[in-house]
Amino acid sequence: MSSAIGLSEGSLAAVHHLREQREVNTVVLRLADPPDSLVPELEGNLTHDELVQGMPPHEPRLVVHELSFASPEGTRRNELLLILWMPPTAEEQEEAYTAGYAALKEHLADVRVHLTARRADQLAYRRLVALAG
Image 1 (cartoon, one colour):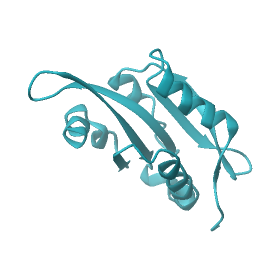
Image 2 (tube, rainbow, N blue to C red):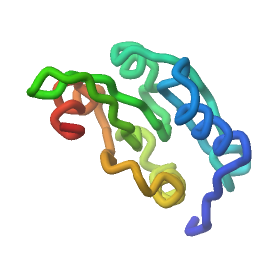
Image 3 (cartoon, rainbow, N blue to C red):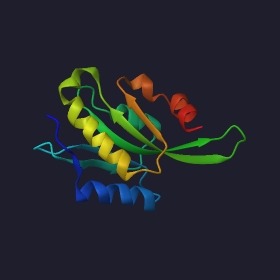
């Protein structure tokens, strides 16, 4: 299944809302049915714990999350993360989600932190801060 995955108008609007509104720090996208575009599944203000707990254990997702943290100098920072959540049990969907991930990376060219997580521990707060650092 080597087809292009597009961004739906809803997913574009959700990402725009995340960038423009303080009450949204997380957008979770999933593939539509049929799997030709990404659609928003969740648009909200999640804590780190809520983000990790909200990842489905057997289904992939694409996540844009604004991580808030303190720099080593003590200043508050926010950094956008682009996360491909790909649990091992969802391998049959990996190619389609990877294509969606590439489309989202292209759309969010200024986001510098990209990661693939296959287990919840790969989304540990300190690890994300180190990547955003």
